[in-house]
Amino acid sequence: MASFTLQGIPVSRGIAIGRAHLMRPAALDVEHYLVAQEQIESEVLRLQDAIVQVHKELQTIWADLPLDAPTELGAFLDVHALILSDPMISEAPLEIIRTRNYNAEWALVTQIDALSAQFDEIEDDYLRERKADIQQVAERVLKVLTGSANDLPRDANVDERRGNMIVVARDISPADMMQFRDAAFSGFVTDEGGQNSHTAIVSRSLGIPAVVGLGNASHLIQQDDWLIIDSDAGVVIVAPSAQVIEEYRNLLAVLLKTRKKLTRLKKTPAITQDGIEITLLANIELPQDAITAMEAGASGVGLFRSEFLFMGRTGHEQELPTEEEQFVAYRDAVLAMKGKPVTIRTLDVGADKPLDTTDHNILNPALGLRAIRYCLAEPQLFLTQLRAILRASAFGPVHILIPMMAHAFEIDQSLAMIEQAKKSLLAEDKKFDDKVPVGAMIEVPAAALSLPMFVKKLDFLSVGTNDLIQYTLAIDRADHEVSHLYSDIHPAILQLLAMTVSAAQKAEIPVAICGGMAGDIRLTRLLIGMGFRELSMPPALLPEIKQEILNTNIESLQSLVKKILRSYDPDVIQESLAQLAIA
Image (cartoon, rainbow, N blue to C red; front, side, top):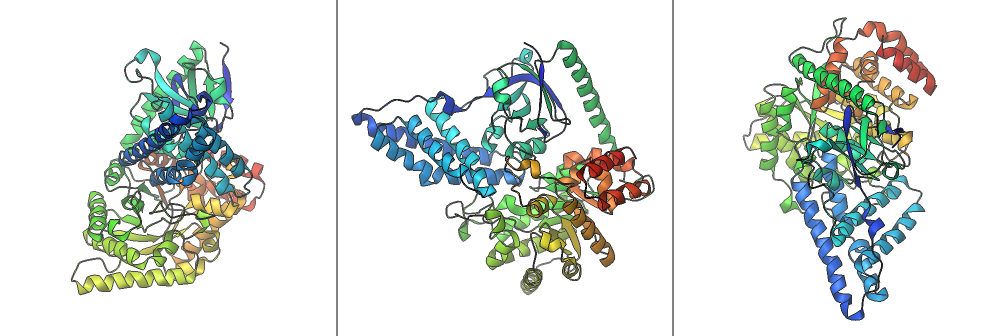
């Protein structure tokens, strides 16, 4: 077989070499036949049983999520469980069986095809993206019906002659990805997806090379083909020659050796060559992650996503985490950081990441009742969390970070709620740090354009670049059809970042970046050249970012940084960014 190369979107870093394992869509193998009238109800029961089994599978996968899995992954699984419970999946195909005598698989595919056609006509990007979720849920049901639920080769862990497995698929659902986590796989290749697709988020979290958005890779690649993933370049080499494989094995060995050397920088301060110290912080989701952050040499936690305690539960008050449960989790993280600061983001859930997956039918969740809007609409829930966070501050330095604020009244009401929480703790004689710093996430353009009202009342700022880019460029970052429009170096984004740094510097308050840009080594010199002195990222990325900082002279970057900020030409920005890398 002749070798060829596919170009896609790089979503994580590294090299993977292995054999292809194809995940074929179950819908391609569906049988079509009519069921005898006396067998209709048993066919209905067969589909119902399959749906129940998939529900159980999703619950098991959710419960078994690895500690380093991003919070968003739990939200994705919740959405899939919600779709599975919706009458369009759980009831409509049953009626097709009863009225048309279709077999269960045929009835389900017929319903999904009809739904997909309707979604294709929707103009809204977010709603159109839900088509992929519906298809992924249907795939799981079909695999149960056809007996192909386990896509893993039986010898994945034992047959070393096959090499490490590289999963190739049209798309990979979050649930499928987690089922592959225990197998001998070394990379992901998908036809669909973008920088912030399910596959991208999970592969970065697990540190696994992946290339997405390849178009028709799953049709061009054959089962057991040798593959090389160069995820830095976004390239997949199919059927490489022995010489190319050897070359990449040598590159991989060098990469692994370099990563091992980087661990020696753990205790080295991140100080540039011209003497400017950069604070490198870790993003965590669970208290246990704080241990990983310490092992990576983090100077603190820049973002503790508190949603992990809430996701996967229903929205009924008695089933939400208690104050004591939250307090223990926050306290454990604070103690694990041994005196280093822990920034806890208050609950960032809502219509797009629902607590209760049974009653949400929001046209545009990303713009709905979420984050601080949700918390202010549920004051008792918010007060309970604030009390837990404040109590944890008695055990070490804690910062409170409020997400998605855009209005003055949101700032005022949040601060008032914090004061209310303090007074209630004082009345109960419970200890806390009365001087806990309170900050805002700058992730809405309105916030970046009205910074004076933030710096006047708050103690620090933290830029959430993922949402800031999404809202500024008006795209759904999980929609592969517009993923090419997602740009972290768009002039508008760079201007908003520069404005935020400038406002914080004038007010003499700290400003950090805790979104995806902070952990992107391509942008490290640009960010610190712009004036950012705190970067927060997944712990695994800290060593190489620290090395980049140690090799940087900020003063020598200034002319190029200014050129980038003055330019509105994408080519000039890209060229200048490349020059920064060697400055």
